[in-house]
Length: 333
Image 1 (cartoon, rainbow, N blue to C red):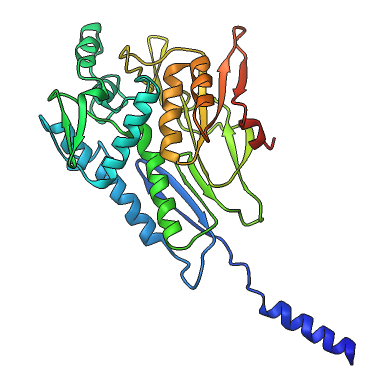
Image 2 (image 1 turned 90 degrees about the vertical axis):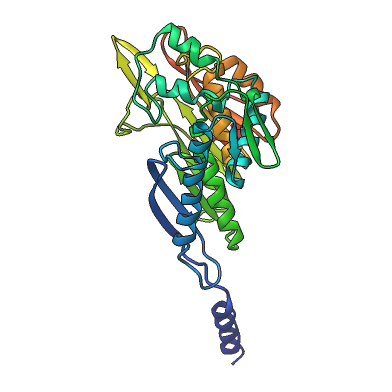
């Protein structure tokens, strides 16, 4: 009888334990790329796709240079500036901080140069030295100022491009939306930019792969350089192996150096940055691709709660890896 009572108590105890909710997966397209979101629901609400879609569309209508009436497009079309929305304000302030920390290696005013080199929202021009020199006259975030919600520009031809921070920001916006719904375990990924919190469905930290930098615009030939374990952080990777073109036997990659006005040419193939916010990781990853390996290592080591993983070509033409002092703790394989 005592054994029977014990078994009944154990069965009752087990039946009263909250069941682990299955993780929900949501996929879609935004910003010209795919997004994948995984989260563990709370309460009775499982499908958060409508709120996620609305959050992403809000970012798109604020920061997309492909929408003529977006906030960022209206700013670029103006002669003196406009009153900007709260989303663009957040991105501008974050971008200004990265601009200052990187001594101009990250610069959102490169929009006209990005277009000229064929990586923007307008048809590519024939690039000449004279054209680059003229466009450089309108590059520099120090020519922007924000006052009472109005973003001013000191020159009428300044064109903003937030593509090096917008995806990361979109990730953060969705992550913040999930947190507001009480979600404690999630992964948000948009076009390779990621933010994670808590644990995955296996009860461990989220595992994320870092791609080998293989020249492949269609992203069909994917191999992993390594796998890392993450929680409560954002991750972004910038590289010159997906968005590029070949002309007269020379490769032109999408990362434009704001100082020279030309696509970067150096040994650094990709930069993966881990930071508390994905938009910061996104912006710093782009800055690192402009700065090169040595300056990037020095910069990222100096930033709090920020780590970097860099793949570069050595003098013998072989791919090598360097990472900051704290990044090794994240590597799984």
